[in-house]
Amino acid sequence: MSATVLDLNQLRRSCSACALHELCLPTGIDRADLERLDAAIRDKRSVERGKALFRQGDPFRSLYVVRSGTLKTYVEDEAGSVQVLGFALPGEIVGVDALAGDVHQCSAEALERSSLCELPFAQLESVVRDVPALQHQLMRVISREVVAEQSHLVMMGKQQAQERLASFLHSLAGRYARLSRDPSVLTLPMSRYEIANYLGLVVETVSRLFGRMEDAGILAVNRKVVRVLRPDLLAELCGSQRSSSHGGEAH
Amino acid sequence: MSATVLDLNQLRRSCSACALHELCLPTGIDRADLERLDAAIRDKRSVERGKALFRQGDPFRSLYVVRSGTLKTYVEDEAGSVQVLGFALPGEIVGVDALAGDVHQCSAEALERSSLCELPFAQLESVVRDVPALQHQLMRVISREVVAEQSHLVMMGKQQAQERLASFLHSLAGRYARLSRDPSVLTLPMSRYEIANYLGLVVETVSRLFGRMEDAGILAVNRKVVRVLRPDLLAELCGSQRSSSHGGEAH
DNA sequence: CGGGACATTGAGTGGCATCAAGGCGTGTGG
DNA sequence: CCACACGCCTTGATGCCACTCAATGTCCCG
Image (cartoon, chains in turn blue, green, purple, cyan):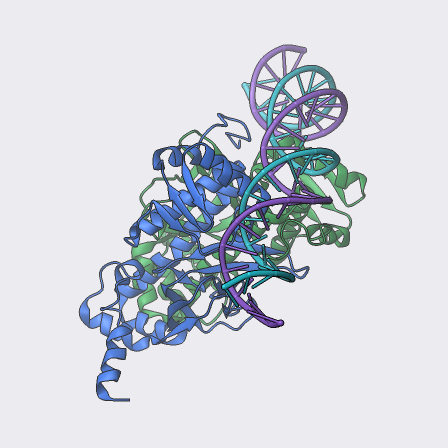
């Protein structure tokens, strides 16, 4: 390798040069600290479609930030039954579940060719020790995971099938917007099975709902490409109907 | 106040003297560091039954560790619909959801008179800065939250009503055991409504399931006191039936 | 002892899962 | 290049589990 190539690699994997750095590490970290962080990050890793980044039960070594592509995280019980926990888009972190027990509690698999920043935890911790702003930031990022799962729980606990799909698409559109992608054209890298599973439904129901929402003029669905024609109506469907039932007050 | 009273208070709020310190801060923190942690903890706080520790939307100031009693955490949408997210027992932490946005994303309410350690976050952070072991430990505790929510999600996504109640009771028994309480005698501080809501069910269903499990000789239910007569059968019900359906493989 | 909240029990219904075909796009091999 | 086959998705018919509605029972507190 020539020096030029090395420099390019160096630049490419630099956090300060990363288009996503405001997503994974929004604020309060100055240039000098960013360089220290860079030093802790191993060369970025690439995962092919269908391949696992890590599997449930693997020993914990690193956190990962998605650079490009999409992953799904899921747990699988002894009977082989799967529950999809979430989909990780660029700028989002995976692996947080493993901090508690030093073993991954879920698996992460690429839905399309994806690249990631690997953050070896031991090194990350030592940098964090010297950079208070980074420590704060890391906890914020982890906390976001907690909040995201809470939303997922509300969806599973209180929403109808149609509200769930609407919420899913709405949330996805929001995350697309944050990535400066067009939030009205969703290209879904996950299968209908994976969407259904994530929503706690079966694939037939999801398919019917896509159809119904297309008939209602809200979406234009074409295989993996979903265009949102009426974002307003989609938003309405997220928290619609059901005035009080299913337990408005829990006490 | 006399000096003696002050000393007693000092002792009572000390982490090193706390019967739960192995739960909230399991390992790797020596005596000197514990004293530094003590210094960061504000006098413990007490919350009456039905009163809120904090509410959704409140500004974030502190994390809390339950010392005694039980809390519920829940979110409430604009329509007043509630989703119970979890129940916090002694040794467990609440408030983690607020780290991301400096605002509490859920409410926490005491189900019975409870006392808590308040950990003002600003001070906690500064101690954490100087005590690497504590930093690691704090992240482990937060990660536990993530893992607990993942289990909740699996329950909501893939389990039948009966499996959900069984899993709930089973998990509660395990947490009781960790607290050296008798795991075969569960005293439920939460109402049937709250249990139902947590499980994504309605109260009638929960009531019927208690009855069914009592008929099956698994439980002896008497209002808020549930005795587990057959822990083995209870454990079986947690992951029983449903060989492959509802989406064994998600791809 | 009466009122109110919480809990139980029963009958009926509806939403979503299940079962079963059939279409469509993609990739592969002849 | 076309034909076939496979996986994925869609569409339809049926059934069941859990929700809904309604009434009664039980405990707690004033």
